[in-house]
Image (cartoon, rainbow, N blue to C red; front, side):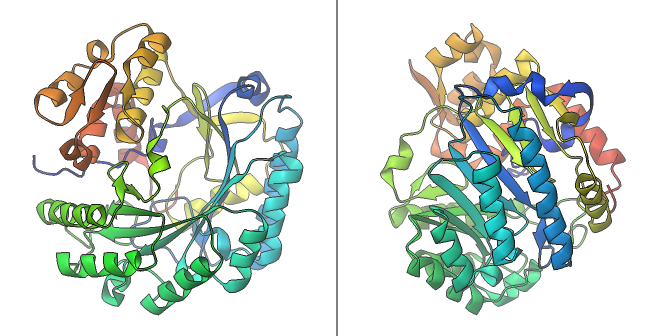
Length: 430
């Protein structure tokens, strides 16, 4: 194959396939949370600087007053949602993502935790927060600990200063070490460190050096990401990557982590805890997002605010969110057909979970996965997957090619909508 890095499919359908929706009210869907597995997500779209590869919904250079007004809007949204969330609809976990959540002041951060508990009724024990080295201070780490955070994920990306500068990252290696020491000192049950491979100027040797420095802190998890150059980002049209060299880096990094006791759960995720291997199925869990830029999922209804990458486009959408009066109307998203629900189940389970459970698939959809998706049989014949009487799952080689295999399962409708968005979106603004 020419390029194993087609697309990272962390969800399905992709957000660029979303479009205008009308006549949809959350009151008509919220009852579906009762008795289901539900997550709560707060999107904090603020960063110190925009990373060179970042195409997420985030902005830089915002004042403390602006960020406080944004937290005010999140509280208004949570207050409206809480009035319609039925008895028995509980949230098992809470995630603060972004952006960089710890860019908020301590007072603002505490308000976010209070909104989750007091407005949304969150009582779960699983709380996850994303951070970056420059924002990881003693004071904010202590605040996370006080609020019961059990997992902190830090975007390190590299311990090499030249590689960090190539990525337009604002932190330096010494800040990474300081932040990692702070997290270890606070004894969070799970610390995750992210690394990126395929950085301009990076070699296998420099990548493994970063991996050694990260592993020295004995993080419970490590996520490793190939560098993607996305339209509208700082690195777009500035860098040409060699997929063959990137794939070699992946293999070396994978083998390095496995040799040090990490178990591979997906192309990107490596864990120390063997209990993490006991994974159930995925694809039908619900998520309610608070804030601007996060995505919500209630069974077949997927929705979010409109998408943007450029600073002006993101700020415009943020302003609209902060002025919004009715947070219960859904105007942008995707209504999944039965076929798309099947695809979502197959994609998420074969790429991220423990494989496709054949009995569960039959129970939910009344058909056979190989019959619905002949590609699964082709992958088994070519050594990309294994199919036994109970499950279908990827082999080690199949896992390594997840970003090539996953997109092959997308529907033609989703693919066309994504292609249309790529052609028509003015990425600097919208």
